[in-house]
Length: 154
Image (cartoon, rainbow, N blue to C red):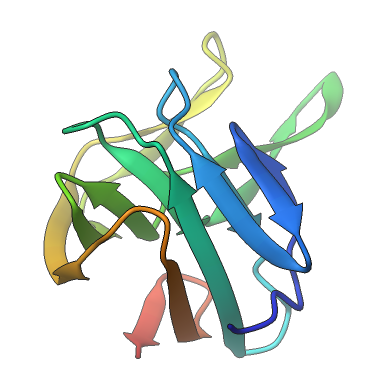
């Protein structure tokens, strides 16, 4: 199993067990570990996880990387808002998938909803491998970031 060196936050039903992430199905579909985008151009993440009792046929996010935008709000403190995750690993129907989201349209800030609105995204799904509950899965991800989008993913 790989180590999880830069784990930033966990939500849903993920717990850390001996330095590894153990995930279960969460009713809101968001059992995940999140990693901060570093200031460096390249990010390397070694991440191991095991699923326990996910709901059959349900989408379950297990690892995501976010683009966070710092948005000034004039008379309010600055807030951080996120677009769709550019990289998302998820389990569905006993398969491990990679979802990529590329912003292709205009981005605007909706002050009323306190969120970024995106006119278009190119969302693609890539099958990685079949998945079996209760077994450890190692993800070794290297990302090259830019200010506008992800350049490469290995």
